[in-house]
Image 1: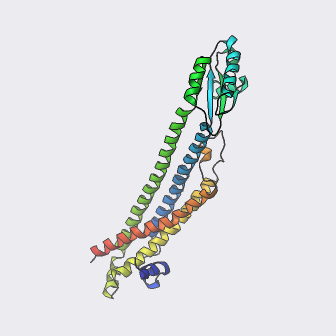
Image 2 (image 1 turned 90 degrees about the horizontal axis):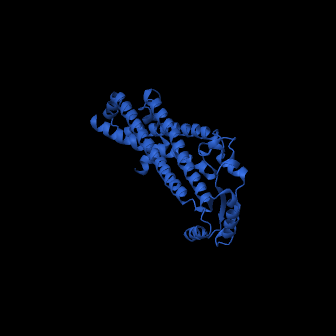
Image 3 (image 1 turned 30 degrees about the horizontal axis):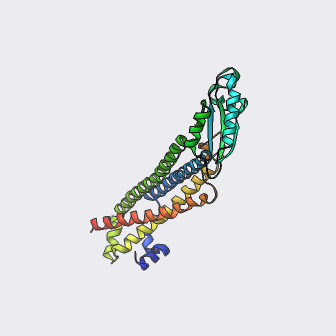
Length: 299
């Protein structure tokens, strides 16, 4: 786009603006399409960012922790637990190790078995929480040592839990960005239809303008400017509504998990502000394409 065309697009031309009807079906369609798509884009962006934050938090929490499960007869449980704790505290890379109490294990089983689980009468394995240092420990070596000295102890370093989380987060992020691209494409299609409709409805006006010497570029700029402004205004309203909806979602909590963490944090609240300018660019390109094609067909 030439500098003069860009200046005309930004500053406008009162005479050219009269070519495009300021109200009507095409105006409402453009405003609604850009607003609705911007609203959906805010939530797609929030979903993508929230999934990344959640997976990072889960992965970090699981990366520095492990669990040892001890299955043994009641008369040997205490001895094997003490032996395992001594072995773990002597292992390089283990920062701390502690056995869960009966109350803590009952709390872990509460969501599945309810509050009346008689844990003291059931053969529930003893769990030991292991916290790693920054360097970590040799999981394979520790498993071999546990197998040799405490046959009833099994180490779970949470690797099988971390990998699916990372994969799921990556896919959710990808789906979020794909959704934003699809939203942009749908917005471009709707604005193109609206521009074509406006051009067809003003065919007689365009023919009169051509008779008095108006160039197709002059006419096209009028449509591009009007539809670009409509796209910008509609998208700004949609982003404002989307941010308002995100703001009133429940805050992050352990009980709510992912659903209460759906939103933005810190500087992430600034990212949706790029949606209105991008919507304006999409509207500009879509209207320019529609205007040039339609004006050629009217020649």
